[in-house]
Structures are given as structure tokens and as C-alpha cells.
Amino acid sequence: MPKHAKNISNPITGKLNGLVVALMLILAMSILSNCRNNNDFFTSKNSLQYSEDTIWFDTVFTRVPGSTYPISVTQIFSIKNPEKLAVNANFQLGGGSNSPYRMSIDGISGTQINSIEIGAKDSVFVFVQCKLEANNNVQPLLVMDSIISNVGGHVSNVKLAAYGWDAHYYRDTIFSNNITITDNQKPTVILGYMGVDQGATLTIKPGVQLFASAQTKIYIAGTLDIQGTPTQRVSIRGDKPVWDPQFLPNQWGGIHILVGSINNSIRYADITNATIGVRVDSLPVNGNTGLKISNTRIQYSGQASLAGITADIQATNCLFADVGSYSFLGLLGGNYTFNHCTFADYSGFSSRTDGHFAATNTLRDGNGKLLNHAPLNLFVNNCIVDGPLKEEIQFDQTNLNVFNTQIENNLLKSLNPKAIINKPNFFNKTPGFVDVQRGNYQTDSTAFGYKKAGTFGSPVTIDLLGKTRKSQPDLGCYEKLP
Image 1 (cartoon, rainbow, N blue to C red):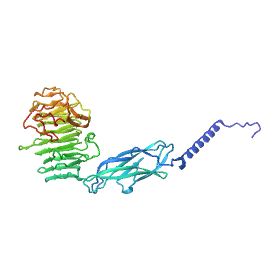
Image 2: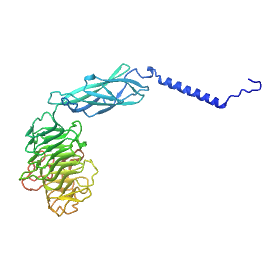
Image 3: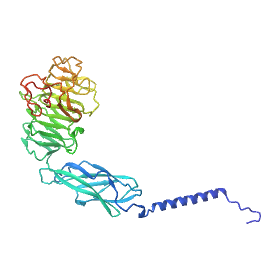
Image 4: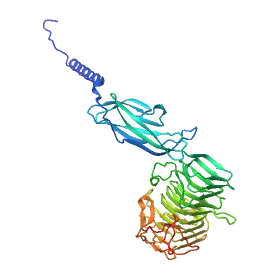
């Protein structure tokens, strides 16, 4: 270095050197933190906390031979690490690869899932399904397993339990000849569609339980004959027996009685969870009846309990309730007779602003333009129409065709805005239902319709449940509870 030269460091170079040193320190710390020693995990015991000690699936249909159907609903529970250190846990199903259960943790699925890290005071979610094999039993059979967790050699578990229920299955079936479903011990499950050709009859015997999968419809071109009894009602509903049906409309399509179908009969049935419970198309010919329905409940439908399009329907002692839009819809005319029926909607399935009991002799497009019209004959006696709106009845008529109504001696939630209802009725009184939130439309000690029924045609001597009515009966489908 020259004699007079000064030892002056470059300020920019100095700053860069400082940054390099700082970055190297940060990198070293990161490497050290990522090279966790096993001692950084809590391993002295298995203290994992399960949100449930037993995961119940209730009842699950056993597997269709040669098929993966059905698979249960997915149950979800959480596992919490209460310690101040993370844990490294291994999980396995007690039954191993032969287990009917499957689990998924942190997006990893299998019968054995290893090295799941659960942070301090943190949780993971476990998703479980089951697929059960046929057990050749009439009654549901309990099938159990467990999810075993292992933390540092310390073991704990949560139990898994489901009742497997063998069933008869029909998949995309059309009956061209008469068919009778009789087994009231094992359920019958319908996959896809079921159809009945013209000239054929589908008979369903007392106590039969039918479960319909998603998108299923039962199409009747011939004849449907449901023969339930007061002690052995026929049940038709969605195929999720584990769930309360009240909260699950639109599980299946419903029963669709087609043009040309004749002499249909439904007695003592419970039809639930459909999109449209029962739909009837067109008037029968040659003096035949369309549908006679009695002592039947149609509830929890996404769109309508009962719908007729220029149809012939006679209903006695029936409950049409808890729907998205209509308890009854009579479209483009038809012949309808209701005696001792209850129409009600407190479900909250939709934010409807129009009444749920509707009848019209018209067919209109979405803009209200009249497309077609047909004669309407509507007879409603000794019935209850109720709901939360001030107006629960809708009528739409054109003078181009017959609009004939006889609505008499009913308890109606209506302002009668068009003065169509011109016979004596009771308006806007509290029916006294037992529990509308749970779909119980029996009437209690406050029942307004107590002993107020009249006689229209043949006397109705029993109620929906087959209970004997008083000499002076009550309005609606139920006699008052004692």
C-alpha cells in the first residue's frame, strides 16, 4: 500500500457483507428448526382427546352383490392434542383391510395412516364411512370396529358402530306383468326408476317399507295398489334411514301416475322426502277412477305433496303437509274431492309468499299468459287448511271454462279475497295442532275443529290412524287426542 493511502472500506460493500451474514444466520436457524428431534414431540402418553367416544351410523343398507352401493353417510369427528408439544400419531382400523369402514385424516385415506402430526393444542378432523356386506338376517345386525391411535407406543381408540340391514333391490325396473311386493321384514330399495306398464298392477302389501335412492321415481302407467292397514302402514321414503326425514325433502322424485293409468289406490301409507309426493296426470276414461287415497300421510316434499294435472283424485283422512310450495296443486282443471283432510305447511323449506293449497282451471306460462284451460270441479269438506301466511289458498280461474267449487264446513286460513268460497266455513281460527315443528298435526285439547264436522256423502267413521270417530266427528284427518 502506498505510504499516503488510507485504509477506507467501501460503505456499500460493508452493507452487503452484513446482509450476507444476516441471511446466513437466518438460514441456519431455519435448518435447525426444521431438523426437529423426536424429543420435540410429546410421547410420554397418548392423551389425544376424541370429540366422540363412539361413532354411530345407526342403520345402513348392506351392499348390493357385485356393486359398491350403498355407502353410508360420512360421519365426522375431531381429535385434539391437549399437550404443549406436537404429537406424531399413527392411526389404523382395528379390522385392517377387512374392515367395512374407511377413514380419511388430513386428506389421507386408508385403513392405516401414519405420521400424522397434530400441533400443540391443535386438532385434526377424521372422516369415516362404512360399506357393509349382506348378513342374511331379517333384522339389522350390529357391525363394530375401531380407529386405533398410537402415540410413542401408547394406544387409545374410538369405537365405530353401524347396524347393517339386508334389503331387496330393484334397479331401473319396468314391470310388464302384475307384481306384488310382500316382504314386510326386509326393506325394499329402489335404485333409479321403477315403472309399471299399462295393463299391469303393482301391489304393495301391508307393512312393506320402500326406500328410494336419489333421482328415483316410481312411474305408473298401469295401476298402483298400496294395501296398508292401521297396524301395518306402508312406508315409502328416501334411502337414508339414519336421518330424521323432517329435514330432508327432495331425496327422491316421488310417485308419478301417468296418462292412461286407472284405478289407483293408496291406503294407510306414509310417503315422505320426495320432490313431488304423488303426481296424477289426466282424467281416466271409460268411467274408471284415477286415484283414491285414504288414511295416508304425504310429508316433507320439496315442491308438492299432491299434484294433479287435469286429474281425478278422491282423498279421505289424509295429511298433506310440510312442503316447499304446495300441499295440493290442481292444475289445468280436473275432478278433486277432499273429505276430512288436513293441509298444512310449517316446514320453512322455502320462503314462499303464496298459499300452499292451490287450484286452477288454467295453464299459464311464466309471464301469466293463458295457454290452455279445462273444467275444474273441486269439493272440499270437513278439512283444515292452515299455515303461517294470512292467505294459504290460491285460486286462478278463467271464465272460458267451468270453475265449480263446493268448499263447505272447513277450517280455512284465508281472507277469501275473490269471494270464491261462498259456503259456510270457519276462517282463521287456531287449529290446535300438537307440534307443527315436528310435523305432528294431531289436535290437542284446544282444537277448534272439535265436533264440528258435517256429513257429505257417506259418513267417515274412522280417522287417519284408523281410530273410530265420534258420532259428531272433528274436522281434519285426525280425531282429537284424549
